Amino acid sequence: MEVLFYITAAVTFLATLRVITHVHAVHALLYLVVALIALSLIFYLLGAEFAAALEIIIYGGAIMVLFIFVVMLLGPLAVEQERTWLTPSAWIGPSILALVLLGEVGYLIAAGDHTALTVGEPRQKAVSIALFGPYIIGVELASMLLLPGLIGAYHLGRRLSKEAR
Amino acid sequence: MLSTPALVLAMMLFGLGLIGLLSRRNVLYMLLSLEIMLNAAALAFIAGGARWGQVDGEIMFLFILTLAAAEVSVALGIVLQLSYRFRTLDADAFCEMKG
Image 1 (cartoon, each protein chain N blue to C red):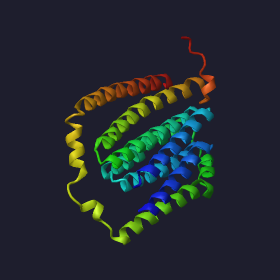
Image 2 (spheres, helix red, strand yellow):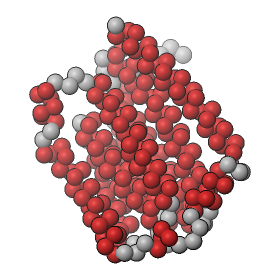
Image 3 (tube, each protein chain N blue to C red):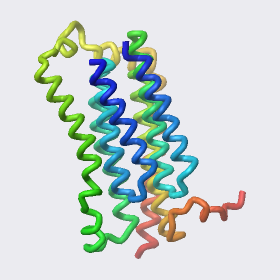
């Protein structure tokens, strides 16, 4: 487990370093997706399975897709530009880092050490009880944060489409 | 225990995000650096929760996730507006706000 953690930490650090030093937005986003997946594996190793799943589904899925859509809206996507983007130098780095993560998952399955998943009461029950017990005011505040976020995003996007016409 | 190296990693990731935020001039990259810093904070919370065996770390992670979703949706709308009005994403070009 220790070795897995250090390999994953190295992957996370390298991918994050490439995010802030890359000049192409799409390449930087690919590296950021790899960094988020590696971070979710670290969450799993720390014993937070639900947080690991949420990290992949919401961060790696929803938020990164939002970023990629906006990058595609920003620049004109000509065919030649797309062709120049799809060079091996674009995807070889994230692919190598993701292959390291895939090897770790294969090792975890082959090692057959599934005790972390089956021992005792699932932590998620305690998390849910605490979330809707002592932390209920935080849930309310989160909903009050999400509604202005929705209205703000709708407002900004609507004025944009009206001007474009 | 893995919590100490996890905290070190969170510190390094936060430093990388801060360096990116301070050194990049493209608004989109500054947003990405903000995401990295939020993730580092979430990792610190998860590591603390794992160290003490409490669930509070994961609950704070859920709140950070909510905050990040709301922040990204509004900030990307602002980025789109800026790119359509100024035809650039240079942060130094948006200096005309009077206030």
